[in-house]
Length: 279
Image (cartoon, rainbow, N blue to C red; front, side, top):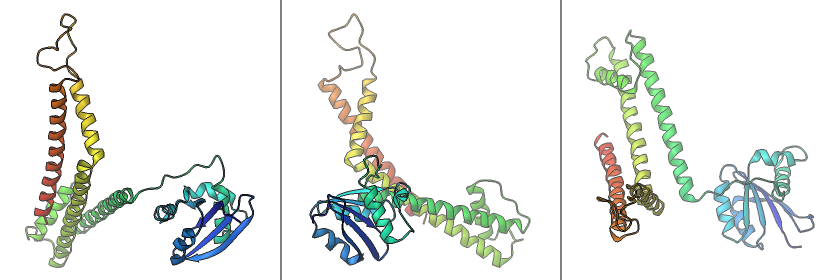
C-alpha cells in the first residue's frame, strides 16, 4: 500500500523508520544503515516525513526534501508525549510518525547550509571566548601565588603576562614565566582567529543581496527625513533639499548606498588586515 507518513529516528549509524498508509496501518517498520537512508527515500513516492530537531536533523531534512518529500522538524519535547512505551528506536520512530500528523504540532524551520555555517561561526566564537577567559583566570591564579595581583580587565592580564615574558618581573621563576608566556600567546591566537572569523562574516553580509537591500532601506529612511515642505512653497522643495522621487533624490539614494556598502567592506578588510599583522 502507498505510504503517506514516515517517522524517522536519527542516530549515528543505525536509523529507525516507521511508515503508515492513509488508513493509519503500519506499512514499514525497519532499521536502516546510514548508507541506505537516501536510497530508501529516493525509491518512495512523495510523502510526509517527520524528524526530531536534533543533531544532523537539518542536513537530513535538506537531503530528503530533494526527492520531493515534505519534511517537518519537531522539537523533541513535543514528541515525547507520544511515546507509548519504553524509550527505544522503534518506539521513538512510531512517536515521531504519530506527532507529525497532529494539527496543533509546532515545527522547526529547516536551516540552509549557509545558516548552519553562520551558526557554526558563532559557536566557534563562543568557544574561543570561553577558552580565553579560562586562560586569563589561569594567569591570574598563577601570579597570585607569587603575590602579584592583577586588576580586572583582559588588557591588564595581557600586560602583566607580556612583562613576565620579557623578564621585567624577576620574582617569577623561569618555569612559571614560561607557562604564563605560553598562555599569553594562546590568548592572542584565539583573539585573532575570532576577529578574523567575525570579519569574514561581516564581508559576507555586506556583499550579500540582503545586505544591499538593508543598506538601501537604511539610506532611503535617512534621506526621507528631509525638512518638510513649506506651506507657501508647494511647487518646489525647500532650499537645500530635493523632492522625493526626483532624479536628484534617486541619485542621492544610490550614492548613499554605494558609499555605505564600500565603507562596510573597507571596514571589515581593515580589521582583517589588523588581525593578520598581529599574528
